Length: 493
Ligand code: MCA
Ligand code: AMP
Image (cartoon, rainbow, N blue to C red; front, side, top):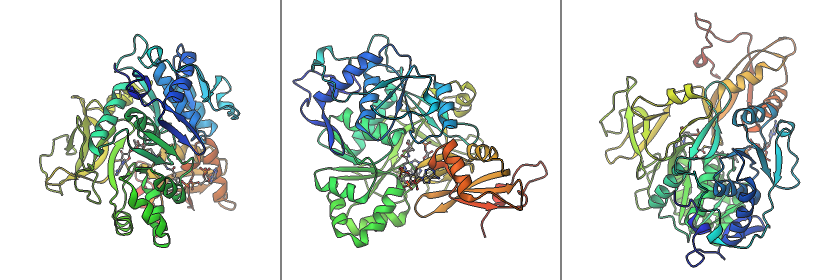
């Protein structure tokens, strides 16, 4: 296939070799430097079957992933805050040959069986685009896997979504069309680099366009304002980040001015409440644009830069994406009336290939004629704008833009000796969208475990963002005649 990153691999005459590509804090790389560092590393990992990347928010992670893509070797980004239980599962499931990491990082025991390769972002193989590994090695096609990204389901441990090269190219080019995204754009964000949003859109996106990205390391309103004042043109974030900006705006006229300078403010990964949309628009004069995607599908819809930004909608299907709404029985809904609710199903070159080692789950995710069942419920306005109204599975929680499976947390809680029974639900939260709530029947009702103790237990085994933020103790869990926990009865009054 053609190169994923023409600006890195094309002939020097056409390539922006001296232009900035990546900046993380004080450290940055031009296209020529990135080509040299990633090219040298690509040469070293070329023979690996699959590589894990210790995905800290650093220059090293970006170089490591680009190197794997140049070499045609699938990369598995790892959340560096994952606990040993989660990491152990991912490593057993994806069986990487080695782990790419920044020098000096201490890797946890779950990775001790892997060969470690330190990423040297200053490596300077001569810039020789003609010999660059950008023209992917023989045998690599558009269908070849590029990334394996782990994503939670309602039950069981996370599944690895295998994302082919063509899905990345397709989604990034569709977004370029929708957002008039070019090599002149400078993106700022502070998203984690082990998910689609921060990694594919936030790092690979600017590189595919020949533009640049400035990563904040950690999201702060000050960091965003600083970069927008220094020439950044676009901001990507999850709703929690925009909520925090909206909260800060009344006391910070300089932040309002900085956000007003942006060409495009984009939110995704969860719904941005209309109230936050309105507060940001009122203070900055800019409307946040929402796009809707999923790890398995990459991006499906977006409000277009040249379209009407309507709060509460995720816009229209992106070029190449087929989208339909279906009834419970699978019948396609033909109405564009803003009220008939159906499940969103999508088809197109933006889709993943399969869940790694899970043919059962892959088969269940698709209809017989190739539509992917998103599980998201929506209506369509007369002009095609999609409005997401809910989710089919109540056992999936979106907190801070992270998808969290209730079953996974319940299993972790049940491993705690002081827990006899556990149920996990999501409750509305102004900041996080939803918050993880654990309902616990203690082993010894006279001495229930401390809430912090349970939160730490989940954070250590799985990941900190999966920890329960609220713990409620009960004598028994409400169950139906079949013994199944009735989660709808678990409501705080
Ligand atoms: C707190 N911490 C703990 C504990 N309590 N660590 C261990 N054990 C504990 N008990 C630490 C946390 O690790 C964190 O550390 C810090 O304390 C604050 O924790 P927390 O409150 O969880 O973080 P936050 O500041 O509230 O995070 C908000 C956030 C974050 C920044 C918005 O939720 C975030 O980055 N969300 C992005 C999710 C995302 O990218 N989703 C994309 C997937 P430290 O501060 O050091 O971290 S969806 C996707 O890709 C699809 C395709 C799409 O459509 O986009
Ligand atoms: P993930 O599986 O973590 O990639 O998250 C994908 C899910 O995030 C989708 O199925 C939606 O439920 C949700 N999502 C992503 N973008 C949006 C958005 N703009 N509005 C509402 N929900 C969204």
